[in-house]
Structures are given as C-alpha cells and as structure tokens.
Image (cartoon, rainbow, N blue to C red; front, side, top):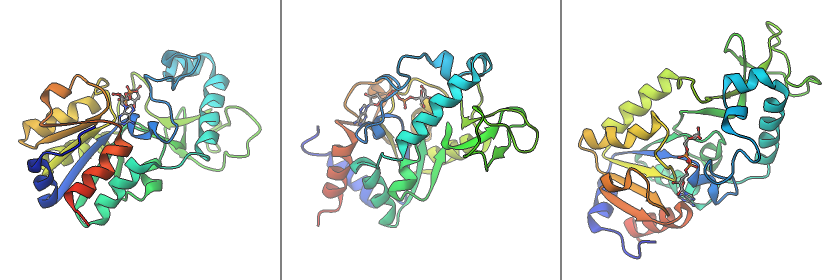
Length: 244
Ligand code: APR
C-alpha cells in the first residue's frame, strides 16, 4: 500500500479533464465477488460455463449457474473502490469507466459513464437472434425461451471465443487515447482485447496508473504502480489529491 503518492500523479489527477479507468474482477473482490483467478467458476471450468460449445452441451447447467450468480448479486454492494470512482466523476471531471465486469456494481455505486466490454449479468439475449429479451423472469423452463422466436435465451455476456460488442470496444479505445490519465484497476491484464487498452493509452502518450495488490504483465510498463487493494488505495488517492 503506498503511504505517499507521487506528487506528479496527484498533480496529473488534479488537473485532468478526462480520466479513463479500466477495471477488472479485482475491483469487485472486496464486495465479495470472487475474481476469475480466485474461484469465480467454482467447481466448473470456463469451457463448461463460458463458451458457446459449453452452452450447447448443457444449456440448463449454464443458465442455472448464471441465474444463481444473478441471485447472489442482489445481496452484494459496491465497495469503497467503486464508490471512490463514482466520487471522482462527481467532482466534475469526465470519467470513462471501462469495465470487464458483468456485475453492474459501478452503476450501482453511481458511475454514470460505464462501458461494459464483457456484457452484463443483468441482461439476457436470444441465443439464435442475439437480440435482448425481457419478460423471461418468471419462466418455468430453464433456459427460458425467446418470446419472439422460441430459441433458448442466454446471458448477455461475452464468452471465450466471442467478439466484444464493437461499439463498446471502439468507445473504450477512443477514450483510452483521448484521456489525460488512465487507470488500470483490479485486472490481471491477460485477456485481450481489454488487456491492450493500457498499452493503447501509453502509445498515445497518456500516463497509466496501475492499482493492484499483485504484479501483472503490465506492471513493468505502468507509469505509476499503486500496490494494494482498490478499496483502500482509491479513497486514499482521492483524499491525497483533494485534501479536505
Ligand atoms: N483490488 C485490486 N485488485 C485486486 C484486488 C483488490 N482488492 N483483489 C485482487 N485483485 C487483482 C488480482 O491481483 C488480479 O490481478 O485483480 C486481478 C483479477 O484478475 P482476474 O481474476 O484474471 O480478472 P480480470 O483481469 O478482470 O479478468 C479479465 O478474463 O476470465 C475472463 O471474461 C473474464 O472479464 C474477465 C477477464
């Protein structure tokens, strides 16, 4: 945990007009959501739960597993890290939160501009037509059927081997290049293309601060390394930047 932050970082944050923030599972860890490396898939493998092939093989298993995660989320609250990012935006500077998380906790914390690169557990779409669906909540079948075409429904999340929503990715890349300061928070920076965004920022001349208790493949490139849990580092960073 940094006891003092670099004055240069504090000054950059103080004078920034636009901050882009890439977040990963680590920012939700202190809310009680397991990280992907820390047991998110439980006794299953990502191949079983997060691929089209896995879904076709056992749609009920996959649907029920995500339904259980959705139920669990009702009890889960944003933590001090999410709230600090929402407060940053409330200070009036433009914040683009680019998240790989599907839990909706940034929005719940109050962040208004959130780009969801990997979809959302809160949305459901037609497996056949890829269109968002509603009115499935009380269906008896598992998975429920699309009200329009009768195909199965699936969570609106990006599975392994699938492409990211093109508009979300384009907006994330544009924000990474256009911002004054970029944060990479709670992500192992191992899954692409999200993992390329900190490099995209650096290539555009934007300094990048990494917030993570551990080293990642990106750490060696980071302009500032803030070692520690996001729920502790981020509130302290805000307090140091704008002392009361
Ligand atoms: N604060 C900040 N970072 C933390 C914290 C914390 N309290 N706890 C853990 N971390 C860090 C870990 O050190 C690790 O670097 O968060 C990172 C979590 O890494 P992953 O579990 O791999 O999650 P993420 O990088 O978000 O994964 C990216 O991979 O499995 C796919 O689609 C899935 O969106 C996911 C993507």
